[in-house]
Image 1 (spheres, rainbow, N blue to C red):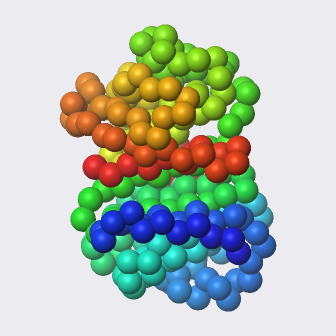
Image 2 (image 1 turned 30 degrees about the vertical axis):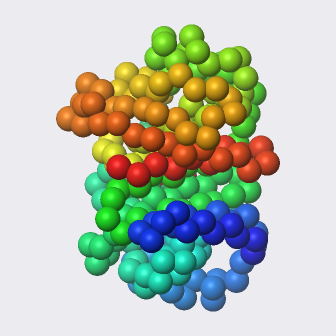
Length: 209
Ligand SMILES: CC(C)(COP(=O)(O)OP(=O)(O)OC[C@H]1O[C@@H](n2cnc3c(N)ncnc32)[C@H](O)[C@@H]1OP(=O)(O)O)[C@@H](O)C(=O)NCCC(=O)NCCS
């Protein structure tokens, strides 16, 4: 399985994998609870996405020499480490799955396929000021969407609106970093720097608290 592993620093690493058919025995490292969750996914594509994201986190942990602790979903849907140590975030999009781990800080990762139709739904997730600086370019809109997803996943709580509570500073469609903040919630005025990568027709973003 093709994998790209990036050790970001001594505390954090990410891995991105191409989704391919895999043998279930490669998932032996999963906890009992995770094996049950996996068994309960009926849709074959979703099953592959779920499994590949777990294989990605396994690889990211290996890059940091951290044993796989097992993860569970909290009440907001965010994965938490079963031994209470470290922070994880997972993502999948058609063809790819990815994961990031940080020893000390919450993290968020997201991958999205660039699709033309995102231009038509900009008003649902973008503030007026963001609509003003973004070009009518699906890649530029996808960067904004994905940056908001990464920020959302890093903070982890439901009830944060992409349009009303996550505001991005202007950036161009070649940007490798996007600055954004959460406003109007309990986390008001928390600032994030989102890293941006492009892999073929997919935008990858990630951020640390
Ligand atoms: C839940 C949500 C973060 C999932 O993102 P997505 O782009 O659809 O899917 P991804 O594959 O990138 O990410 C899925 C992973 O997000 C993680 N996730 C789910 N809820 C989460 C949360 N509250 N915090 C952090 N991570 C979360 C899960 O690990 C999930 O993977 P898994 O099911 O394999 O465990 C997203 O759909 C969402 O709810 N966003 C907020 C709602 C919103 O405001 N939407 C926009 C309105 S216009």
